[in-house]
Image 1 (cartoon, rainbow, N blue to C red):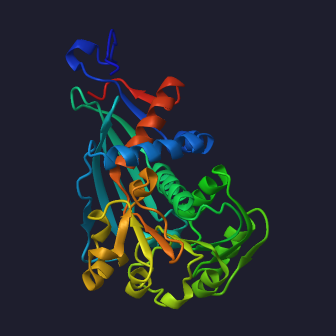
Image 2: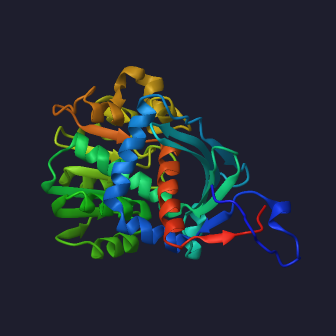
Image 3: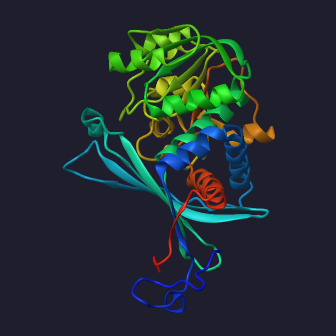
Length: 344
């Protein structure tokens, strides 16, 4: 912890009267620069955070959803967590909003901050812009699941349903992890958005007229929409060749999940807030969940080549804290964080 020492404040007071850690701010531009240059390290960082959580060292209580009866599309979520194990011990909270109406104003749907606390004293020591962090941990999680469940990293067709920042982050992680697709097909309810997304990709691409057309043509399928309830209900379109990264959690009907091998990040968290997985368990029981991503990493669960494989991650706060602490450390040591000397 970096303490205030020999600091003279404008009002003439001494640091002794305001002792405590130096509070740091890391801006979105700096966060994005670090994330874009460290994708391989971030993927490994997320993998290790999953394993620490699997081993029972970390604390990841339920996320808290702040909802607004007069604005049912909008919400703000608090994700407190402690990522702990071995020499690692870090704690903090992510506060992330989702306001879909922002898109019509030319603003991002999601915005977020993460507060990191110092474990010895409990003092908050840093605030980081976190929309890029949230996207980065989601993308790393998806890439890890794709490698564990699909394993064919060359010559496949990638399908993308929902052409926003999360989808771009996932594709960046897949590329960093060595995936090479012979074709990428995309669909978004906003045709202009899907066409813009497609034109930003390398290789052969096409924007298709429906999500069903994307699934029919693809091997690896990414759902990254803002759907509030299941809309893709035809289980017959999914074949044993398919691996599905169901990042947006509420796209798939219960019949689709019933007939697949389902992998989650946490079997309790994944059932909350009317997710497709939660609705499916209500109908078909907990047995439709085959295991967690960490189970795949440790070999406790093997991918089932006879069925479609679906990864539905609720999103663990320990991953956000792990990535935020990593970014904060690099920003601080390279002089890219802003010190607020008189915060305390």
